Length: 213
Ligand SMILES: [Zn+2]
Ligand SMILES: [Zn+2]
Image 1 (tube, rainbow, N blue to C red):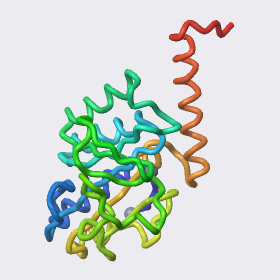
Image 2 (cartoon, rainbow, N blue to C red; image 1 turned 135 degrees about the vertical axis):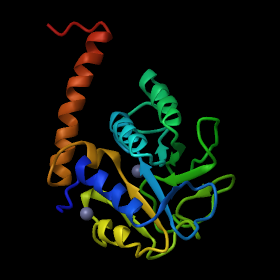
Image 3 (cartoon, rainbow, N blue to C red; image 1 turned 135 degrees about the horizontal axis):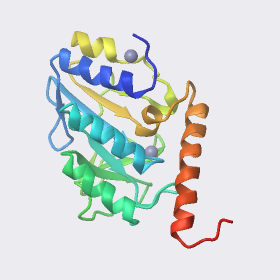
Image 4 (spheres, rainbow, N blue to C red; image 1 turned 30 degrees about the vertical axis):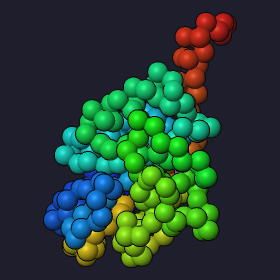
């Protein structure tokens, strides 16, 4: 099995967790033995979040999607943003706030669960008033956390350990863009995403009555 960052191996990761006897849990309760807390920080692309969310629903898997209200790359108040929120909920997923420190204002779009975007060490594990911070203990526990940041598993792809049931429980953070767009490196994947966005933006410009001739 090649540990490619693509949707095929993403499906294999989910299958491995099922084969290992894990259940997919959210951050509402403290982690229990046998839980996989599947977390997605949506940094760059609502389209990628939706694609992954649909794949997971088809696989019978529930995840928590963390969406930004102040992203440079997407607008949660746009039509697509509202549709994405509604569809992710409709697919059965939980939705939390992907906040930019120190702003953590709650609104009805989000469950009371927060993941900071690009957090610094000083506050990453600190409790946040009115929220579960996904990086505060016990939701974050050393040895029970894996992340695909920048298309790199610092401690290795977890598929074998999931299949073997090695983790007592696991918080698994993946970024949808990394899996949905093709590329052997983060740079290639980002360029593939930008190609896609270019087409979408050209379409949006036409919709916005911009003369593209
Ligand atoms: Zn793997
Ligand atoms: Zn982020």
